[in-house]
Amino acid sequence: MSELKIIYIEGQNHLSEEDIAGLKLTDLTNYKDIQTAEEKGVAKTTAWVEKNYFKSERIFTETFIKEIHKRMLGEVWHWAGKYRLANKNLGVDKLKISSELKQLMSNTKFWIEDESYTMDEIALRFAHRLMQIQPFPDGNARHAKIMSNVILEHLLNSEIFTWGESIPDPAENREKFLDALKKADKGKMDELPEVCQILISILHYFKLKKGCQILTALFI
Image (cartoon, rainbow, N blue to C red; front, side, top):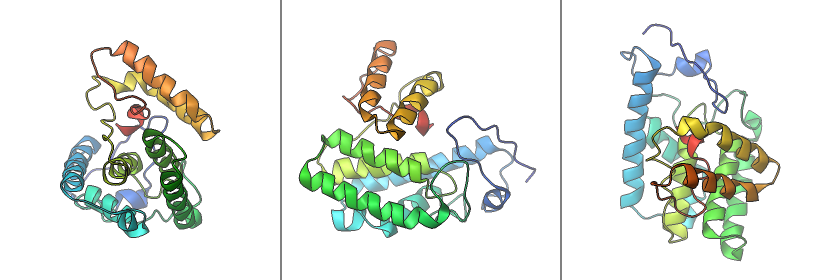
């Protein structure tokens, strides 16, 4: 395979040479083909999640977190389901990945038991922090998307997020989402739903579930 030419955009993790060397499908010639192959794995994992039922005891484990990622990208990358071994432009220190995930899972279980937030906000806070941690070399946003839907559907008995799959050109709204995410990083979670309302007014034909399409542009 010839050298991959990847043009990174804001909010996207960078693949190292070691990451790229982990490609299983060496017959693929460009990054777009790799992304297409990845999406097939994501679709299969989404279907697998929807046809099975998982309890809290399984969901809130590092084993399950890794399993979801491996199912997503395991046909494309050798490192699928394995924590990153290097620090990147995004994410916590590599040595803190495990401890930060354990803290997130503990917090989320408490939020659910204590009913600290609405169901949507619990899933949103979980996805947001998981994105901040960036456990894997790549695919973290798509992984957070599936994990948050698992929590909604299997633990909260709530309608899952569609994550703006029908938005024609989510890239147009990426800047708004990135700005909202940066504010969320500072604890201003209340501004995220406002972005939803902006999208509703722009894309009035697309029915957004209340409070759920927050991070759409980060999941493309």
